Amino acid sequence: MNVFVTGGAGYIGSVCVEELLEAGHSVTVFDNLSEGHRSAVDPRATFIAGDFSDRALIDSAIGRVKPDAVIHFAAHALVGESMTNPSKYFRNNVASGINLLDACVTHGVRKFVFSSTCATYGIPEKMPMDESLPQRPVNPYGESKLMFERILSWYRDLHGLEFVAFRYFNAAGASARFGEHHRIETHLIPNILKVALGQKAQVELNTNLRTPEATQASSRLMPPATLFRKYFDGLVMDSPTSALAAKWMTASAPASLTTAAKWSRSARSP
Image (tube, rainbow, N blue to C red; front, side):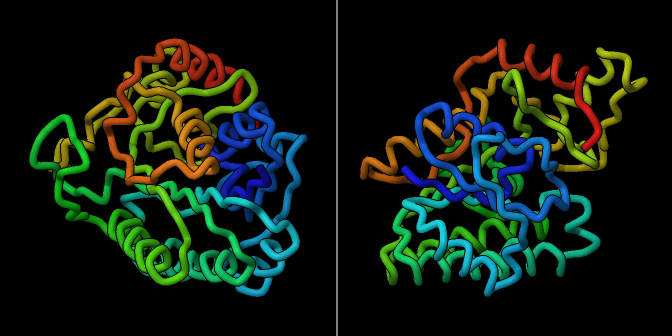
């Protein structure tokens, strides 16, 4: 399949691109490199530098590539920042995302995989979380992702754009070549690994945060990129789609955490 991946120079995006290529798919990465790294793009993939806030550019890119499916990772994703600059999150994660959806409709794309977040649930009523929980985000980041999920539902109903939304958080793991390398690291697990590697003195948790997700470690994650690739394989073969939440994050993968530690030790500057 011919796959168009936004945010493919970022953490999960770069590993997902590698997974897709290993599975035999053709991949084009679209990224503005504001948070991702050009060195994180698998050389076997085609790279397009750009921002999907540029409506003409994303339309041209989709029209030129003519993908069978789009996987959408590109987003602003710092919860704390979203509380001080909500405009940045609604403009990028929602308004600019509509440019991508319109390009998909214009050029006949019918498969769409969305990287959402468990932040759409807000403070969960029970643990572990599942899809039956109400979605009540408590920050603009989670709200922006939920808004985009709702927009996707309308595009599915009105334009036939089939989609699946993955809701996850505290992602962990790495491949042998690509891994987590954020400019600002907020994820719990890599910060803990940095302490173990001597790169940080300690990990401080904000005990004033009243959300369990502030301190819950997803230590039993199947690598998220593998999940995206596995579900994508089913999606492109016209399997039924559904919104997938934390229940997909229960497969034990201790080897991926070991790889993450190695990656954290060897991460290079962009």
